[in-house]
Length: 464
Image 1 (tube, rainbow, N blue to C red):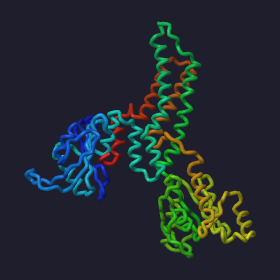
Image 2 (spheres, rainbow, N blue to C red; image 1 turned 135 degrees about the vertical axis):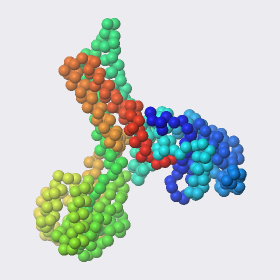
Image 3 (cartoon, helix red, strand yellow; image 1 turned 90 degrees about the vertical axis):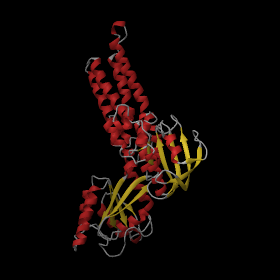
Image 4 (cartoon, one colour; image 1 turned 60 degrees about the vertical axis):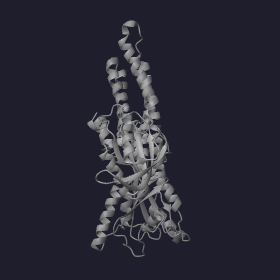
C-alpha cells in the first residue's frame, strides 16, 4: 500500500466543478473533519450526524480576528462509518462563488487538512470496503456521462450489478478449489478425491456465464466510449444536408455548389443513448484547388479511422468510378448506403430501375434530406449497425481492465480443463484454478496492485 492510500490524515477539496454556480461544496474527510469544520465556519448549532446546520462564513484579519460575515452555508456531518469514505465526513455548502470556496479551502488547509489528490475520497471508500473496484470506476463513469444511457449504466454499476453477476461464478470456483484442496490435504483420512469427470463438469459450468460476461464488453464499450461515423460520397450528393438532419440543426454549410465542404465538420449526438460522433467530409473527387485537395485527403483519413461509414449516393446521377471504388473499399467494413435525393426520382421509374441495376446487390436506404424521407429509418439502421442488434443489459464490462480480467479467468480455466483431461495431478490443476480466482478477484479489486489502483484513481476529478 502506498503512502498516499495508507494516510489517515484529514483531506479537503472543492467537490463542485470550477466556475460560478448557485451552490459550491467544500468536502472534508478524516478524523479531524469535525474539529476543522467547527473552526472553519461559525455554526449556529452544534454538528450532529446526518443533520444539516446553518453556519456563517467569517472573514478574518491577518491576526486571526473575526471581521464580518461574508456568506451563509449549510454544513452536513456524516459520522464514521456511515459516510462515503467510512470516515468522518463534513460537507460545507456555500454559495458557488469561486472566491468563497477558495477562501474556505485555504482556511481548511491552514487548520490542518491536506489537499485531496484526484479520486482520493473514492479511493478511501474503496480501501475501507464501502465500494469494490468496479463500483469505484462507475463513480467516475457517472461523473463523465454524456448521455442518459451512460448515466443509467454507471448507476447500475455503482449499485453492484457487475459484482452481483460475478459473485455466483466466484463462489462456484472457490467451492471447486476447496474440493480439490480437501482431497489433497485429507487423503489419509478417507476423504474422497474428486473424480476427473466431476472436475470437468464443474469447470465447464463456470465457462458460459464468464463467456457471456466477456461478450458484454462489446456493448459496454459502445455505451461508454461511443462510435465515429464518417459520412462520405461525391460532391453535392447531400452529405452535409443529411448531416444536418441527423444532428437536427444546421451545423454544416449547405449550398448547391459542389465542393462547399472543404474540411471535416464533426458533431456528437446521442443515438438511443449511444454517443455517436458524426463526421461530415469533403466530397470525393479529383480536387481542382489545393484547399479542396487537402479536404479530400482529410476525408480519406476520416474514412479510414471511422468505426462506421455512411456512403451517400445521389439518386439523380449514375454511380461513377470514384463511388465504385468507395463501395469496394468499404465492402468488409460496417457501412450503410443512403440513396439521397430520392424525392427527385419518385415518379421516374426508369431512372430508379437504372440506378438499382447499377447498385447491384448492395443494400441501400432511400433518403431525402430535403423532405426528411427515410431519416428515422436511417437512424434505426445506424443504431442496428452500431449495436449488432444486441439488446441492452446490466452488469456490463465497460473498460479494457475489466475485460482483461475476465479473459484471463477464461484462459486459466481452459488450462485447468486441459490439465484435468490429461490426468495431471490435482496440485497442478489447482495452480490454474487459483490463477483464475486471482484474475476474477482483480476485477473487483481484491488482488489489484497499488500501482494499478493509483493509476485508476488518478483519472478522477479532485473532490471525488
